[in-house]
Image (cartoon, one colour):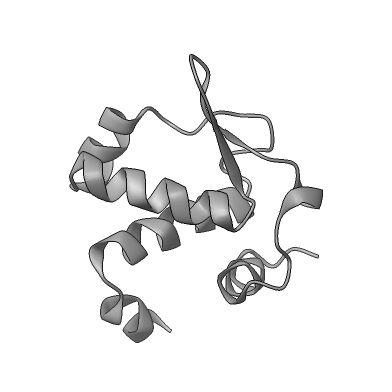
Length: 96
């Protein structure tokens, strides 16, 4: 499956990485994602790429951006469980 990751664009790779972190439990519901500039440094991408990735994760129901609070992981009941990426991440994380 790593081959499919290589076919993703830069934003898709960041979505993949952050989504895996959430589904693997590295970032729990209610916890904030690292700040944009931290993610930029960690992932070696621009702020624009990070922002687009966060928008994609928000569309999947995984995160919510709040002023003065940052980007927060939403409760699992809010996630779009039928989204193909979320299903893939669940399989990788081996969670129910």
